[in-house]
Image (tube, rainbow, N blue to C red):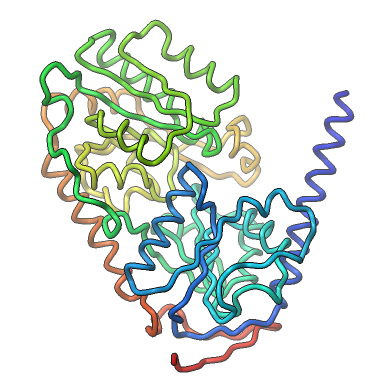
Length: 412
């Protein structure tokens, strides 16, 4: 049985590699028009129906594009992963549209392998990549050849993609652009009889090791023990049985820690978040830290590791940042363990730093630091003003490559 399972895994890996190679060969040679001017219409492909971070990110991108005047066709890619026929699927939208593929290279190539190259948008082809480690792995670097340019949400991801030959441009998730004014300006703990509530979350597909939720539990217990005036909500989904046991065992007999293991709609998630005072992320690495940015825009306090993508908007706000040391990505690190062979590092948060920070924000809300974070989020999103129909972004210059037809046309 063990041999059979190993054989199946091996064959599955070969099949996956074959699909990726097919996509690479077809779409790196498929002719399309690449213009330095952004057209009015754009098809955005991604996990639109996914109730997880990537789903929220692609919807924000689509909303941001619409606010900038684009006519957006949303394309949910999830059905593509249930299809075996290759090179026969149609991408919705006008053929002369631009095409923004909001998928990392592994999923990008899976979708392209199932796409008929004659039945997809023929305009400029952009990728939007979010990577959580300090350097891109070789397979990611090769995938650039099917794109005209790569968009990324942070300087951290841009640095990781620095060896790409295609243009790489930072376009932050449009959190401020697409946020609604919070209806409740008061923090829940200010309301009579409510405990000060910390909030942390983990989606198993994002890696339990990377999100480092067990450190949050450990620090909360060390800070407040069984104090019922303090509370920690752990929101989980898509964890394996082993992973949820690790979380529950870490919680132990603590009655002021609640684990909610379910998938919520956006509205139900927002309601849960609004019961909290402070969002905590002891992450080992983040490509951007979308949940943190949205929490700040929703007037929540945040505490986060002082490393990786969230530093684009949290830099210098020491009251909100957690100390860490860099450690090597270990082979046992669930989703990311397979990348340990590339000698990559990520952050290991100091429990003592988190304990100190938790106690500090309970005593006094760091209003000035949070205001600075919010202002920086707005500032970073100014780049969206250069991303409009009819505009030629300075970073989007026409380039030439074998098999790619470059046509610089004036916009009608």
